[in-house]
Length: 70
Image (cartoon, rainbow, N blue to C red; front, top):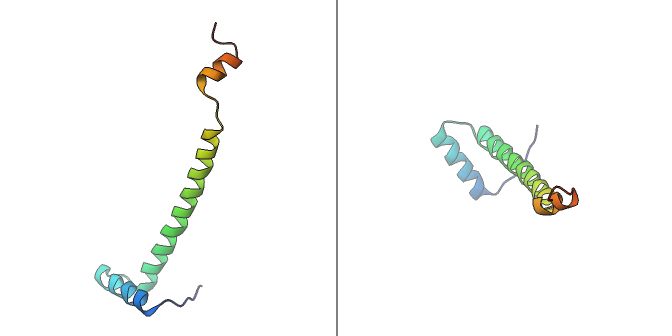
C-alpha cells in the first residue's frame, strides 16, 4: 500500500479522468504509475542496446580481422 499527497489541481484532473473513464481514482493513478515504470524500464533497455550497438564493429572491419576478404 502506498499513500501519497498530490497538488489540488492534479487531484482534480485525476478525479475528472476517473469519472469520464468509469474507473476509480486509485485505478487511474495505479495505471499511470505502471506506465511510468514500464517506460523507464524500456528506456534503460534502449540505452543498453544503443551502447552495445555503438561498441559493435562494422562488418567490413570484422571480415578483414577474420581474414574473410580474400
